[in-house]
Image 1: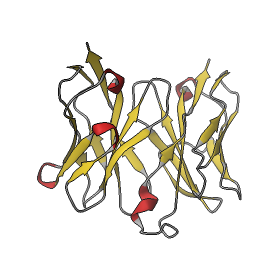
Image 2: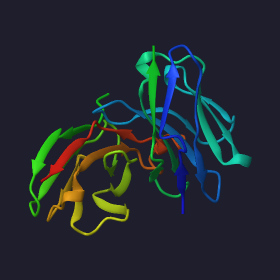
Image 3: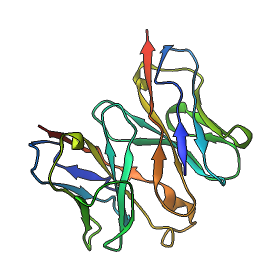
Length: 113
Length: 120
């Protein structure tokens, strides 16, 4: 069965500092991988996705993520965090046979001045 | 293009009652999925509808049911509400893999803002 682990429940980063959110997945084959962001009271917005090819993917709002097959990881990064990035971030995996997303439990990002 | 819209945005029910949540798909999308997000948790897959039929189901009891209409909009119905049903219910639309040009574009789900259900 597929699963996603986001080991950090909360992360606090100073504005302007770099960010890395961790995501590990369990899936038998190469999965489709996603990062979504959820602001308070809002739905989910897609930041970026990985299907195949180049393992470093660029997304919206200056985010990027790197797929590492050997580590079963898909970590999200941003070189300089803005206060507006404060939100909940979810990593998700989709199998190649069915359009079902399996989400991690999320990481809440707090941005300090 | 219009996004995914859900209604109502908030509602309060009591145990044992029934609730219907509604979702309009993004323009051009023909597949609808529903997810339940309990407080402090990631979304959990409830089921998916394609061509007006259930096309896959997560670990939810039969009192969770759905419909998809010819215009691809959808409803989620929950009978005999329990306290643990309190959650944010998210609808997502997508294009089926057979219909998507380029194939992989079908795997992108667009989510609505959700319906927050409180069961007292």
